[in-house]
Image (cartoon, rainbow over all chains, first blue to last red; front, side, top):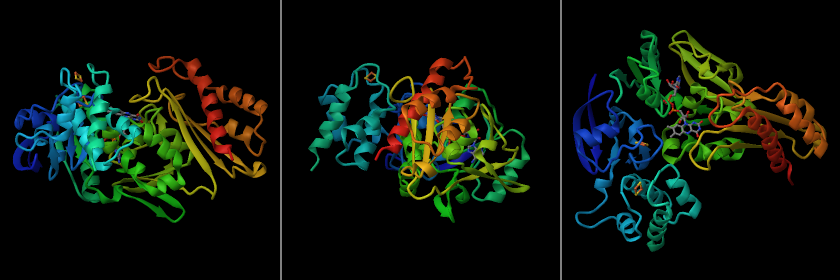
Length: 155
Length: 286
Ligand SMILES: Cc1cc2nc3c(=O)[nH]c(=O)nc-3n(C[C@H](O)[C@H](O)[C@H](O)COP(=O)(O)OP(=O)(O)OC[C@H]3O[C@@H](n4cnc5c(N)ncnc54)[C@H](O)[C@@H]3O)c2cc1C
Ligand code: FES
Ligand code: FES
């Protein structure tokens, strides 16, 4: 079954046909070619596919593309302003929080939503926000530091 | 990849119930955090999926007289944002806090958790101990029953084909009651409970009229009330010998399945007593 959906992705209006059984993850990667959205497990466990849906982080592997009708989606591709990286992207690089990089887009989107909810999150809130994200490389400490450093820079 | 299916997103109840009545193998879609996982694994292959997120009747948290009504679409993050839940049913907050992770809680609904009927589900022992009722709707009308009757086994409920869980209602507890939820899991972080307990204490400061309610999760095919323990503790001074009797009594008749990946039956049987004791310590303090 085909559906015509209307949504905004990284600030741009998108109107397109999708099949009901396509996940939001497949739609973003295969139809919109947003390859920053990663598929790790496909089962909701790893966090690599995290995008923001109406400002809140969700697992795009467990959402149908048709469910995103009339919504606003933000992926890692929509964070930088032209050449200027988002402070979280900058901090992840500066703190060495990126190794293979597979978990990074999902983590940054989760962290962005956290900083939108709480401009000065507590350590517990930071840990809670990344609790559902697996990283097989860094050991998490540099990731925590990157997020803390952005929070600290805020007025 | 998911197998193809037809998808509907009705906005009114009558239309939804008509759709659900038409096909035998229609699946209701709420947050999708159980359903899509099962569909991906191929353990269910519904030809029709009906997304109920457009139904207003299944949304919102509000008092109906002396009962708090939670729409089946209430997400775990909605619960965490609810003043009413914090104030009146803190054990639901304890449970929501350890459920999945932020992203899962943002989508996962209470209704989905209840209908999925997993023995260790986060809402299981809390709703059992709170004596919640479920409100179901189908083409033939509405019915209500206690949540204990609704759950019939692992993944089994009394939901009839074509029926929808509309809301969950929880009777107000007497003023001054206290409650908590504790669980053990293999790792701190995202994991299902190996075992969990929910405890309510009514009249915590007046031992003579004190009532203690206990429910256990992940030790039987459905969450269960520990009625004999409740009788043992009713109106009694809590002493270490009473607690030791409680830990023996709570194990009686429990036979957790031996195939659990998370914990052995022996561990679970010991642990429900330990967790109940820990809960009482917190709830009876001060
Ligand atoms: C990564 C991950 C971690 C998880 N961690 C936990 C955890 O810690 N604790 C826990 O308890 N669970 C956990 N879960 C399981 C799941 O998230 C919960 O059970 C959740 O509450 C299901 O709700 P849902 O809205 O997503 O349900 P859905 O997947 O939409 O539906 C679940 C089932 O209920 C049916 N259904 C849903 N709503 C209704 C309704 N109103 N009327 C009739 N039928 C309905 C559906 O048809 C389906 O069969 C986890 C899942 C994932 C993917
Ligand atoms: S791919 Fe979605 S959580 Fe792993
Ligand atoms: S950097 Fe490799 S998984 Fe996180």
